[in-house]
Image (cartoon, rainbow, N blue to C red; front, side, top):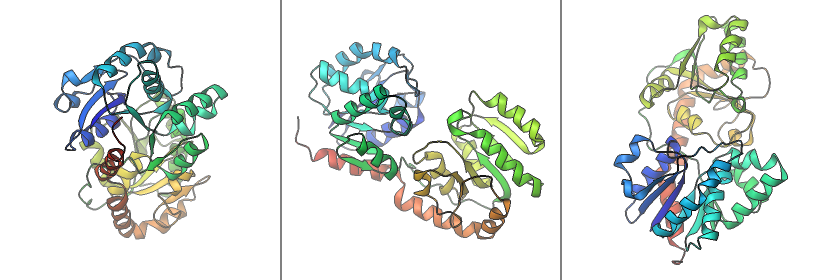
Length: 355
């Protein structure tokens, strides 16, 4: 089976898909990137099976530069002659796949992979985006989604068959050792969508009654300067550490030590970072979103933060930390490992007759 991935080759998430597909016997993998490629692709997909378009896709739209690369992509895909095109992020790379198939008369079918805001945010910003998303979804023989909530929204927009599985872990981490009881970890992007200002406000309330509490804020983004000023204004700088972007091993270390994992975006599907935190035994504190409620039963295996967090809620969860960690890890092992899910997807693709 010849599969052409289309996405951002500088994204670790696309790299994860490439690893899973490349490791599957009987799959011949090709990858087109709207930008360039992470170094890890070098040992995974030969250069002759890769195309770097050198553009920049913006999740908020305005992807004219990406569309200018369409002729080059179309010609390349015609030479590849794939059985399946697998675009990731439907309002940018999905559009490219649909147009390339149409205007270069490709025999390939499209299996489109939605990532979150391409379904939950962008289509609802304007009628034009909604129309585009509907058209891309109709062009897909099959779609993938990482939450039941997002699948429902895709079907409202006209999607046909959708396979739902979390964009999960490649392997279960070793069970963590002893947790630091009042250590909080947050690693979503420091951008408005992820509402990191709410993370600081939540932590300030905890710190007021638990002076031993500490917060580690990983990742980076346009709000970092504003957040550092906010921490100063809240009087919590002594207890907050901004550590920037982390490599996988360093991040795993923080996951292992932190008792609490905080993620409060305004919109989200099932986030990989939340799955990682649960696999490392952290107790998740999540914003009130449908996809988050697919993972967390409020007050049982974590907390859904609906307003200003009452620190007493955490006092109730902490004594059960070890049991919560064991339960969440077991759920991840059963439902959120990535390669078995990709294997099921490939089994479904193999059921289609050759185009």
